[in-house]
Structure formats: C-alpha cells, structure tokens
Length: 185
Ligand SMILES: [Fe+2]
Image (tube, rainbow, N blue to C red; front, side, top):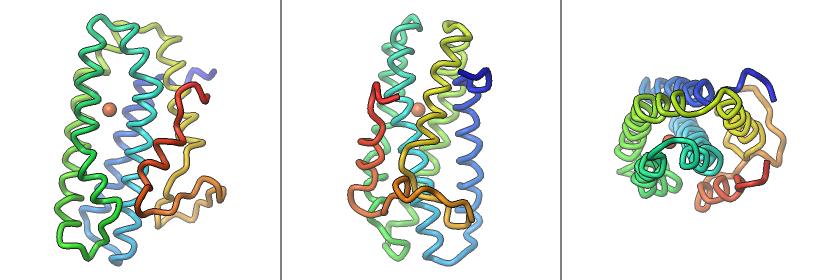
C-alpha cells in the first residue's frame, strides 16, 4: 500500500480528469467519428468510476460513517438516475437526433454528482475514517483504474493491452460493470 492513494485524492482527481474530457466535448472540435469515440471514452471512465465506488467505497461508508447507509442510498440513487441516458449514449451515434441532448444531460449529471460527492461524501469520509482506511479504499480505486477494461481516448497515442480495450456498442456498459467484481482485488 502506498501513501499516495488516499480515496479523497483519487475521487477528486477522477472528477478533474473528467472535466478535461468534457471540455474537449464542449469545444466541439474534431471529426464526428472522434466525437463518438470521445463520448465512449467518457462513458467508459464514468461507468468504471461509479462501479468501483459502489463495490469498494460504499461498503466502507456504510460501516464507518454514522448514517452512512443513508449517504450511500443517496449516492446510488444519483448513479442510477443516469442509467437510462447512459444506455442511450451506449448505442446512439453522433448522427442520432438525440445524441447531443443525451451527451449534454450526461455531462450535467456527472458534474452535479461530482459536486455533491465533494460537498457531502468527502467531508464525511474525512471525519469518520482513519488514514489507513482512506488509503485502503484509494488503493482499490487505483487498482480498478489500472486493470478494468476501458475505451481509450481517441486522441492519445497511449497503447492499452488488447484485453483491456472494449468494443463500444450494446452491452458496453455491462461489460465494464461485470469486470469490476467485489472481492476481486
Ligand atoms: Fe459517485
């Protein structure tokens, strides 16, 4: 275990990284094919982040934080509120009449949720968990980030091992979720 992976740091880094991708999407540069690739990349990142939180952070929140069960219920409700629009984005191409609306809602939903986490979840974690507990949760999120299948950013030269690269399209979201199993780390 390293001292670098405090869960609060990992969560906030994830939020900042998504802002970078959303900024690219909002600038509307690039070809339509790349725009879909970028949207798929954003979708894969968010599904991975939220699934990892649900599997590795929320059980600890329920255990360690007084009233943690209510906090987790609220967090999970917010994740699920975005399910149907993420399912649409999974299959809509950039030419679909609702692609841009759904993408807008997805970005707004993520921003709302990230802000909510930073105002509600983060201070509660800080108050109620030990440094070791925060590090243990952060380590798991980083392990998931390093090992879960993904959809690489279309503009990066970074190469991913073949078995980490997911084909987009129907079932894309479920394949990411299924790869992140509790107890697998
Ligand atoms: Fe969350």
